[in-house]
Image (cartoon, rainbow, N blue to C red; front, side, top):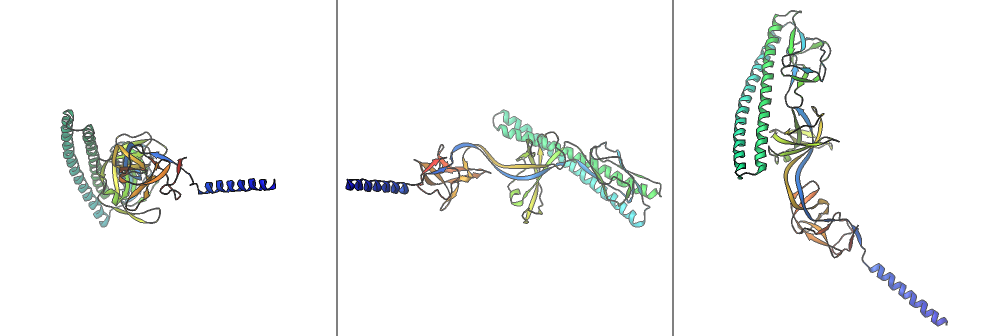
Length: 388
């Protein structure tokens, strides 16, 4: 009896040991997140922070040295073109000051000549854009040009119209500046302590900033206030100079207001000169300003508002994509872990365009393939996996 119990006990121990051994030897099943390879939209963008800027604005400065009289204007007030916005009691002219006033008058005349040249140039460019739009309409109606190209020609014509408006506004400001410089020279030359020089607004709009609100002595050239045309905004964003080389005028820009809506703009120009800017990490970077014109503006957007922008370099409506987190470095290129029959299989892939969170797969995967979204150090060739 004791012998029989001993045999049963031994058999039980052996069975338990074998079961434990099989359990230990059995490969671990790793829980993973899977994603399916499917066609979808993909965009390649440059993402940066930018700001709004009123396109047509003028900074009004003191034309002569003298005592600035107090003004009742405040930021947000509306002014008309030619309206008196400040008054100065000029100091008597000495020989040096007279020379400075005459030089300011000459500089104002030069600025007016430059503004006139810009207006003529903008008129020629607008005429060419109108001819291109008419040609695009004709080709589009005949089916020889895509609708997107026709829309681009129409957008370009509208952009050139706005540029001509801006050039004409700049010419108006230059004319007013010349008049002010001339009046300041004549007024200061003929005044003792009783003469007053009226400073007038070169353009109509709203007061953006008032630099000097109280009565005090100011030097010639001291900024007094800034006037701009509300609603005529452009988007300014500085990008790395290496990225600026990839951007072209006419490209799309998606603009997002923090905790607000988004709208689109068209890149109008890339400034030709870079500047040095220190990054938050303390690294000096060469940056370039990119200017865009919005197609439409949401309510409440003003001058120098902060926005987030995405400059679109490339986009497609339907390409095979996978999350960039699925990529692992291979021997010579990138690879992914595709799941086949419950096991991870390393597959080399050829990539195309790289988006912010997704990449285009050119070769190596087929539509419907399941790949591991976030492979970690537990995943190897042949690892048993199950979807989480």
